[in-house]
Length: 336
Image 1 (cartoon, rainbow, N blue to C red):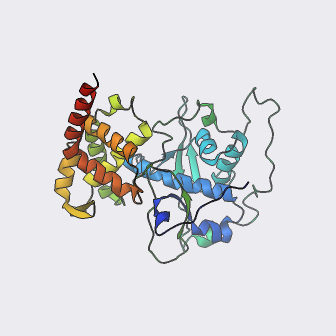
Image 2: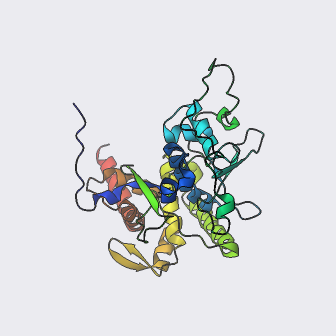
Image 3: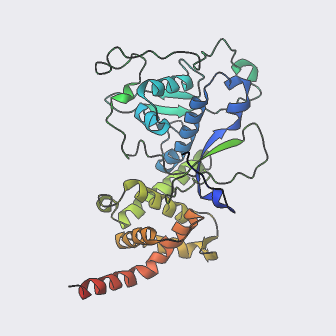
């Protein structure tokens, strides 16, 4: 019997997380030889740029970069080694379209990946437009099979695959940025979004980063508050008890709120002065995190705006955590 999918009601579609695919990758003849899977992978890499901004991953020329290993491709695209290698080759400038540039670090470290802009300026359009013969049609090519899958890696495979199985370290945690509604008019650089349902998870959208010197200060400010918040909640200690990915999401939301330029922050449909909310968020400690975890797991109501719900829960934890702990102690003592 086929799966019976339910309808969307009201604004329920807003509860999903979206990956962004630039529309021009789908509509422009320049990218017609790039497979749909490679375009989706580029969208995943764009998604990871938010993590780079949060961590200040820029080189000496202020160029942002990401870490995206072959293992990451396999995990995110649900594919095998050969296809993952093929997709990276499609995007790379050596054999493919040139939307990414990989720089090896050596010593077992993952390669640095620079994402290239997907649009071409008018001045360079004629010089940079690729002819059909310049880009190999990866969709028609066949991937070499391994003669012995347990022997050595294929010659075309990235050395990054030599890492162990994927884990939630700083290199491959992509769960930081959702895509919120884009109300801009349609254009060639419009974003096509594909929903990924994450249930009760929430990923905070990255704040728009300034450019130049302001961007460096912006990144440094975020890093400063991220470090302070992690210290306040004893991140290194409680990360052994809770999911690191979940903790990173909570920290990311707190950093977004603390670093917000808005004069007010919306808490449970009411506007609160930013400085008041910021002060409270900077007082959150590990006990509040425990309460937040309990509140999220105990919630049975239909949450339509998970991000807003989390912000409210974090804010309210400061005034309800003590009462919750007292009630729990009384309950435990009564059962002794």
